Length: 153
Image 1 (cartoon, rainbow, N blue to C red):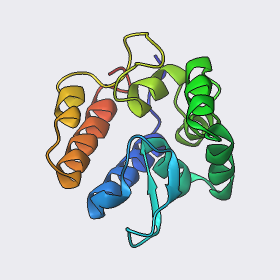
Image 2: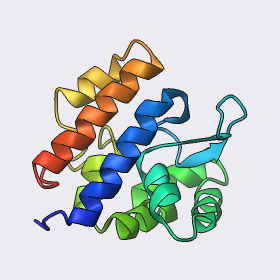
Image 3: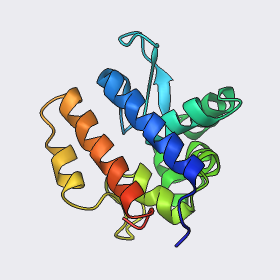
């Protein structure tokens, strides 16, 4: 297992702070998209915010996300085949492995069927979150657990 680098931990905590500052801009089911309901006009998941906050050229993210999600079937197939550009870009920005990315970016591993994804209790708690704020708190706890375990869980 690849050890997490200090810059990875720093960026993950930056993403966590960003999510807690405005929980409405955090959505695990979207790489990223324009959303006029939030002050920054953008919502994204862990991978999306890692790219936006950590990439020297975050516009590449939007290009990758758009190409990955031309339609729901296309996005589903891209996820099944492991060729999602935004996920791969986030791996590079964070300096983590594909295996670590699957554990962090996917609440459950429905698309991969490999038993990876968020461990309990985070998965169950997230699925039963009572508000966006509650979901954000669980997500941040998940990030901290990922850091604590060096990306192993």
